[in-house]
Amino acid sequence: MLLILAVIISYLIGSVSFSMIIGKKLRQVDIRQHGSGNAGATNTLRVLGKGPAAAVLLLDCFKGVAAVWIGLQLTGGDPAGAGAAGLAAIAGHNWPVYYGFRGGKGVATTIGVLASMVFVQALIAGAAAIIAIILTRYVSLGSLLFVSGTTVITLFMKDDNTYLIFLLVITALSFWRHRTNIARLTSGKESKLGEKTGTAGKGN
View 1 (cartoon, rainbow, N blue to C red):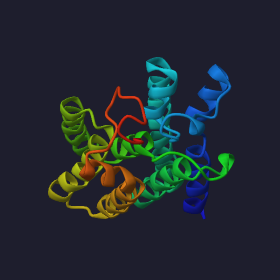
View 2: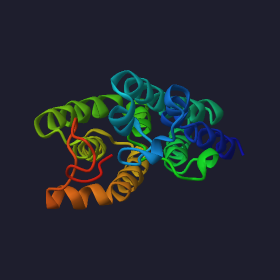
View 3: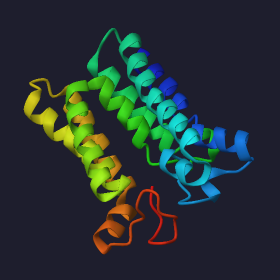
């Protein structure tokens, strides 16, 4: 029962879209109607600028951290509770109940979840992802490298497969949510960081 409660609370927290809130407060706009149409930090950067984007990134990350903490607290430290709550928060960001189930791709919230569950692995994968983004300017590529890299490293570093199961699910979900980005990456039409959406195609 407490696990179910943790999942519900985490989903509701994940459903809070800070890009939507900040977009409405600053410019009275629905962030999903501008730029790439994605309710996330990268599109916030395109539409509103660096400050709002940084705020969205940090706040969305915190949703993931909070969800894992809630999962642990309500289930007495059960890793399965943490994983289920973290996954629920990501689902909430992607399909928010408050915004007609149309949200973002869950990257920042995923960062918070993975960093809370497997910090060292997420740190290593995150460093590789940042380097990839700097070199290629493809945020989507860096996002996918981060999620998949964290999972692969965990596979080799962890004896307990409890988190690994959730990492595999989160990775599969992330690749599915980025399926159009992957298609554009392979065709060379993906938008780069700092490039106006429409120059090469819609990005994150």
